[in-house]
Amino acid sequence: MNLSDITDGELLWLWRHRQRYRLRGYSRMSREFRRGSAFSIDAMAFELRIGRKRYLDMENDRVPVNGLVQLRSKDVELGELCHLARRRSGLTVIEICDDLAVSAPKFYELEAAGDPVIVGYWHDLGFRFPNG
Image 1 (cartoon, rainbow, N blue to C red):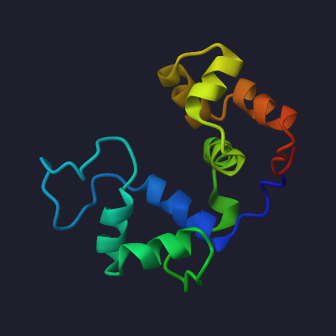
Image 2: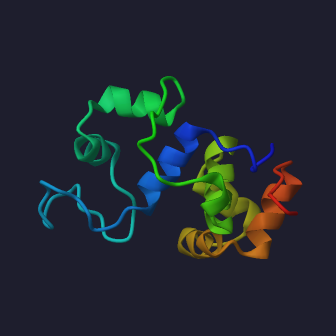
């Protein structure tokens, strides 16, 4: 699978995972507030003032995103491409951790950094990264 070809829905998904500490209408004590992780789907739909189903349809490329995202394919970082490969593969973190013999926290750290071990893992599974 070519990771150079990123759909608008995938860009929306990546953009959601980049968001931190920006929730409007949610308190810090809310379960929707997640330190260091992405907006939830519900919070993102709320932020964009659209329904949850419509948001999910956009993220899964069932309906057009219509310019809601300012992220472009060329701005996607290597760690994000690794995360996208995981999303496309359908593998769970537990399965990948078993394959690599690492803990989940270590895997997340390596994935976020775009570590060569993780990039190599996805290469071995047939994923192709831009410029490599």
